[in-house]
Length: 177
Image (cartoon, rainbow, N blue to C red; front, side, top):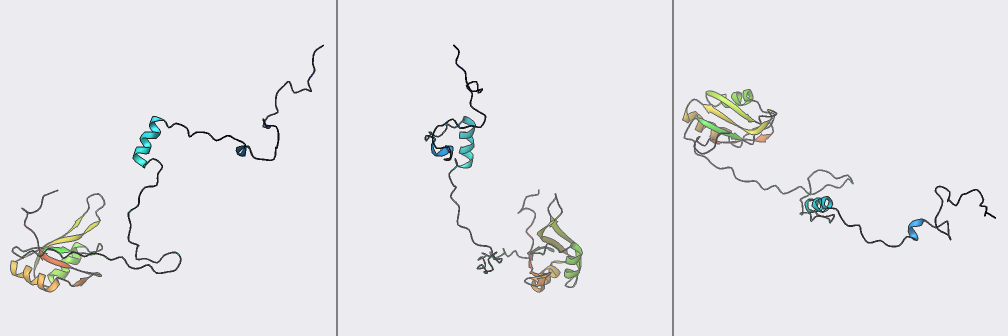
């Protein structure tokens, strides 16, 4: 005589538990501990570049001087200022540094025209977005006017910043882009 089952055909219902015993306990508590899976070649190469899942050593950084989210004021970062290189004025061409990014060539032309006759004023900008690099060159008519401009305008406040005005280095000292 054939044995008869209760309509299940020997299968477990979908989503049912394979274990006997406590059905209220989550599966992972009964699972045996497994050895970590072996990493593939690609994972090992990625670990080489990313540090292998280990936390990278972070350099100590200076806190920014803005207000933090908790309302406490952070200490201002100590900014190391470097003395600008004093270049003697031997030509009518002047270097103008620490220039506001909002300054235009016409602003410089007007400022330096108060000291002497200006031939040309050129704000140096990035090629890709035309944003100022923060310095410029001004060409005066004579060397005497250039010297007077350095005396009068060096360390003068202009558009919120103190200008650095000195003689421009000759073209043999710097390379052309």
